[in-house]
Length: 292
Image (cartoon, rainbow, N blue to C red; front, side):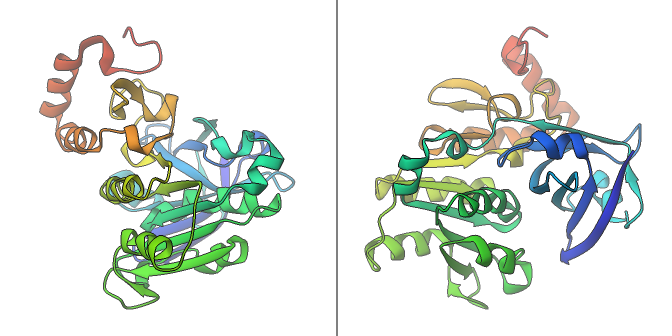
C-alpha cells in the first residue's frame, strides 16, 4: 500500500497529493510518469510525476477529475492509501541527458497549459537546480484555474502568466504570448517544450514552426493504459507509428500528426470505436511487443 501523506484541492476539480513511494522516488526523473490504482480492481490511471523527494521517499502527483476513476481519487484524504503505484515509466526529458556546458548556453522556453503545468514544473525545477534558467509561459482559461504559480515562479528564469479571458496576467492564448516575446520583446529561443491540452500543443507547434523554434511536446493527455497494450496512445510522428507511453511521452512537436491523434481520441472513447480501431490498425494497434 502507498500512503497519501498530503492531499488538497488546488482549484476546481484539480487535486494535489504527496504519496509515499520510495522505490519510485529513488529512480524517477523529470518527464516520467506512474500508474496508480486506488484499489485492486480499480481503473489504471497514468499520471505524470509532478515532483519527488528522494530522501523522504515521496512523489507528488497532480490530477484533474475527468472520469469515475479520478472522481474516486479526489475523495481520498491524508492517511488513505493507493493499492498500486507503478513506475517510473516513460522516457525522461531529453534535457537531463544533455552535456552540462551546452545546456547552460541553451535558451529554453516552456509553455504550460492548464494541468500541463504539473509535468512542466519538475523539468524547470531540475534545470534551476543545475543553474539553468528557463522562461515559462503558464496559461489557463481564467485566473481561478491557474495552478502551481508560486512554485513555478520560484524556479523559472522568467514567468509569464496568461489567461484566455484576461482576468489575470497577460490577456489571450499562450500562442499570442510566444509571438509577443519573440517579435515584440526580442526574445530568442533554441527550443520550446510545450505541455498541455492537445489542441494547445497543436497551435503552439504551428506558431513555433513560423518562428523557427524547435519544439518538444509531451503526449501524456492521450495515455490510458500506460503500457502500450490498450492502443489508446497510438500516434503518428514523422510518418511512423509511435506510442506515447512506451516511446515517449516526449516527441518532436513539428512531426506529430495532431489532427489524427485528436480524431482517434474521440473514436476511442466508445466501445464500438475501440473495436473499430483495433480491426482497422491490426498488429500496429498495440505498442510494446507489437504482436498482440
